[in-house]
Amino acid sequence: MHTNRSLQTINYLQIIVAVILAAMSFIILPVCGPMKNGMHMSCYYTGILETVVGIVLFVLAIVNLTNKNALVHKILPFAQIVIAAIAYMIPTKIIPIAVGTTMNGKTKLIGLCMKPMRCWTSFRGCSICLLIVVLLALIYLGMQYVTKKD
Figure 1 (cartoon, helix red, strand yellow):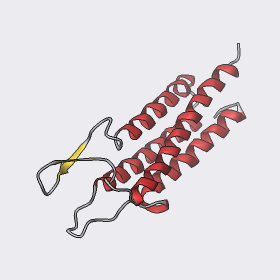
Figure 2 (figure 1 turned 90 degrees about the horizontal axis):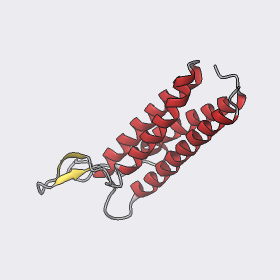
Figure 3 (figure 1 turned 45 degrees about the vertical axis):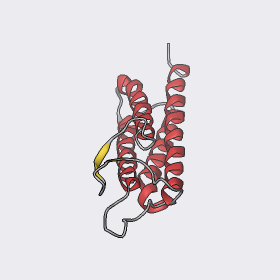
Figure 4 (figure 1 turned 135 degrees about the horizontal axis):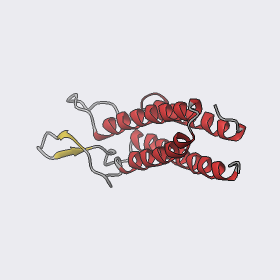
């Protein structure tokens, strides 16, 4: 466990934000439901992505909290930043990920609905959580060097 109480607090905050992120798309602010034909819209797959990312960030925060290896404490915040950045770039189609084809035969990408719908609000909430994850990881990295023993 950490000897520094501030670093522990950051880890606990990361755990809370990761749980919120995992619950955001289907519990707190649900994405759009299936269409009349039973097919899911792109935002459904974005919700799955954000839920999985929340679970991964939760596991990383738990590992960081319980691990005593100094190298792990230096590497995991970078992993959290990269994962959060990728999780933001996939729904915005900066990194396109296909999940199948539409009824017209076009490639269906993970993303948001074309018109403003519930999923836009959900993605904004997820974006805020991802930003908080990045900020907490940066603060964690900075505090490691400030509180480093000589």
